[in-house]
Amino acid sequence: LKMKVQYRSTRGGETNLSFEDVVLNGLAKDKGLYVPIEIPSIDKSVIESWRLFTFSDLAFSIMSQFISKDEIPAEDLKILVENSYKKFRHEEVTPLKQVDNIWVLELFHGPTFAFKDVALQFLGNLFEYLIERKRLTEKNRRLTILGATSGDTGSAAIYGMRGKKNMDCFILFPEGRVSEIQERQMTTVSDENIHCVSIDGSFDDCQSLVKAAFADSKFNGEVQLGAVNSINWARVLAQTTYYFWAYFRVTDGKGDVEANFSVPTGNFGDILAGYYCKRMGLPIGKLVVATNENDILHRFFTTGKYWRETPKVTIAPSMDICVSSNFERYLFHLSGDDSGILKKWFEEFERTGKITVEGEMLIKAKADFLSAKVTTEENLANIKLYYEKCGYLFCPHSSIGAVAPEHCDLEDDLNVILATAHPAKFPSAVGMVVNPLPTAPVELQLLNKLPTRKKKLKNELGQIMGYVKAVLSGDKFVSQETVQNEETSIIQSINGSKQQDTSIKPATVATKAKSIVKNDSSDKADRSVEASNGRVSNGSKESNVNREKAIVSKEKRKSWGGFNLGLKWPSLKSEKKVEKGEMGFFFMVKCSIAVGVVVGTAVVVSRLKKK
Image 1 (cartoon, one colour):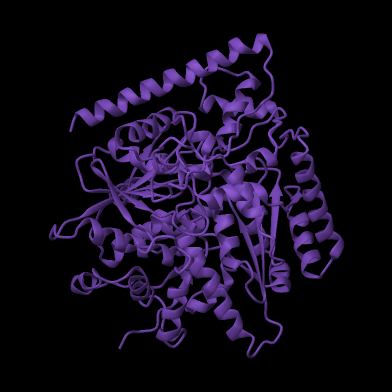
Image 2 (cartoon, rainbow, N blue to C red; image 1 turned 45 degrees about the vertical axis):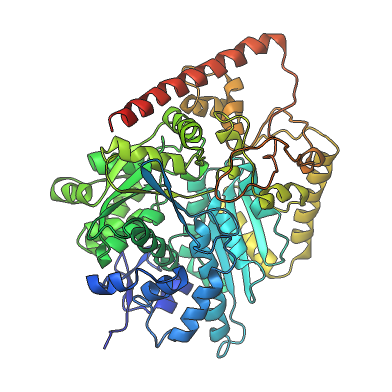
């Protein structure tokens, strides 16, 4: 008989927990993350028997390896899984497309056009199921979701939790550091149980606030916290499904072969799911950690140095992370599942911001993962190249995944690229090298017609906890103040009033702008960075009314993924008049970007010619 699957904390403070325990707790009491005590090893013949399963049946079969029937009956789990993927726009949920010599796993066909939907649609249903069952014996049992986002997690969590019974969802995001579309996907959701909070800081700051709130036992017990970030084991588990799915699709008729997976990586949860698949027995060759200029993971897998640095602002905002919370799970396994070693590492990290691995452990890490750092210039050049050569458009995150195998000399292998988001979520970044932009999903166009609602708070734990408790206690003043402020800003925008983005100080942005426009410290270069994240500062006069006027294009445009809906992407260009003295500057900036793209394109083309 199959033994009951149990879990423990990476830091050793908790063990022999049930699946329900780890899902509802989210973060362990000792600040560790939950992992299975044993990772199931699945026989090769069993894996092969899953090849022709539907996506839902495959997800059910994999999850059943980690969820005991006495916790969630098979019939219930099957229904939960099936309901989780009904809202996806593609019948295969995560379809594969062959583009040139690579395979692209499109993970953006869910409600929010990002890979996080695959896990968070399931997690929302799972939370509701478990809380309803708890309320049979605990009448007042509720769940307060607290999460942090660098862009896509927030909207996916919100769409997964909206309208759920006995549940409130609070999402923290860094003010001015997510794309405009990403922010609107969050702040336009009007369900009463959804609460968006912008923080003056980085994603790492938001993530630290969430972890600190979970670590506060009094607050945690009072509001009954639950986690939606990938610190929650259920998120990682749900993401294993599409590795199996993709492997089956790209190896059909090829016999016993391995496939490589290149994963745009920020918080390490997505690629960690692939690591667990490989441990389970899926024939994965190489797992490639693809990073942008925020390359703490690449530095670790090449030098053994996991040393924290200040996050850089790039055109791939969801990867602008310098502390990857899920990396703790991998380091636990790298240590030989030794909680003592892991705990010492993180005590040192909390004190110095550094973890260093050497010798046999570094050799093992390099065997588990390859890694690559892709610059903004290379990223833009690759977006341009694939669109012009193949008619396929990557988002700025997925494009990094497409470039990385070349850095690792894997371009001639069977490579699967995880396309983590739809390119229409990042029009300003993609628009730097693609003109005109292709047609976009109508769902994203409609966001501009909706009022937004959020609460701005300082980067202080006391403020966050106070706001959560005020909302849960039914403080009408707090809620009404938030709605009124945001509705006022929308009205001003419709009237054409200038809405200056002051979330990032010019001096700070000028430094960060160097990641896109080199050798230029002028704060005027900030516009290319902020615009690439879907924002234009310095008083853009474009109104919501103008954006609502989606013009149907008469000319035939390139499209992808079946979204040829005839609507142009919303314009994010500033209409502010430029003084004569500034014209030369902007010309030089554009030339600098153009030169970088040309050089990057030349590098990519030269690599393609090697084949």
